[in-house]
Each structure stands twice: as C-alpha cells, then as structure tokens.
Image (cartoon, rainbow, N blue to C red):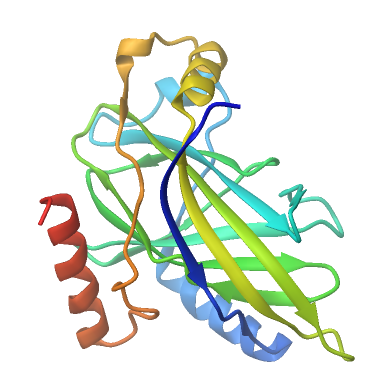
Length: 227
C-alpha cells in the first residue's frame, strides 16, 4: 500500500467515565450539538445544500497492532468524533460508518476534533483527545481530509477499566480514497480537492473554558495561515 504519513503524535491518557456520568454528559452534549450524518448514496450527496461542502475521510482504529472493525452492530466497537466549528462554536457529532469511513456535509470554516468517544461492549465509554483540526475553505466543494489512524495499546485492570496510550497518525491515501469516492458517487477527479487534517500538540485537551477555547482558536488560525 502506498501511503504518506503526514503527522504523528501520542496521547497517553484515556479518560474513563462512569455509566451515570456518561449519560449525564451525553445528554448535555446532545442538547447543544448537531449531527453530521454520514452520506451513503449519490442521491443524498446531490441533495447537499449549496452553502455547504462535502468532507470525507476515514478513521482507522488498531489495538495491539490489530485493526478493529468500527461499526454500530450490537456488541461491536464504535468511535465517534466530536467537532467544534471555531467561528461560531457549533458542536457537531460526526457519524461514522462501518469501517470508519465518513462523508459529511459541513459549512465552510475551521473544525477542531476536540475529542473522540470510544466504546466497546467490555469496557464501556471512554474519550481520547487527538488534537486534530481541518479546514473547509469554500462552499460547494468536495474535500478529502485524509485518514486518522489511531493505534491503541490498552491495559485492563481486574474490574475491566481501561488505560493506555493512543498514537495518532494522519495519513494521505488519496490514490485509494479519491478513486473509490469517484466510483461510489459517480463524480470526476477534478471535483475533489485535498484539505488534510493537521495535528498540533499545543492544542488544548479541553475547550470548556473561554481560555481553553481561545487558545485552540489562535493555534488553529495560525496553522491554516501557515504561521
């Protein structure tokens, strides 16, 4: 396979949340977040509003070097990215299909993947912080943003709690995914542009305070201005 590693980093903490705590936090987030539905057909793609663009890519999750199947099946594992659009603070939950692929309709702006929810039937719910951002420069376009590869080395204690490090890599596999996207949605290659995800270790682990959010904004703006 011919691919290019764009960025790599390691996040050393997975945050465990109790079941009751997770339910409370999830309900709070759902109340102030929208969902970026995963677009699966050419018909749905053609119905995207002109004010938005299409963003597509993939999340690949590995544990001890073995790729895990991301899906929504009962007793399966899932990975759900949480985004925020820094211009207006809109929070978005990104829907991911089986295999970790996603095709979202998003308005132009800069987006920060400020956390990802990880869930499997044995460990419950956890969050990891990839410190990744991407840009949607204009409306009416189709952008390939790359693959976010997550390599997890889990350790479980006697009661099933999980800890361990996650190494994040941003891969550019445009030779595979652009041709697959063309075939799947019946579009031409010149309709697709690249706007790859960027990692920066200076990005904050949380954005719940004004100080943390403003730090994220300043770093992301600098990244996409090439500073």
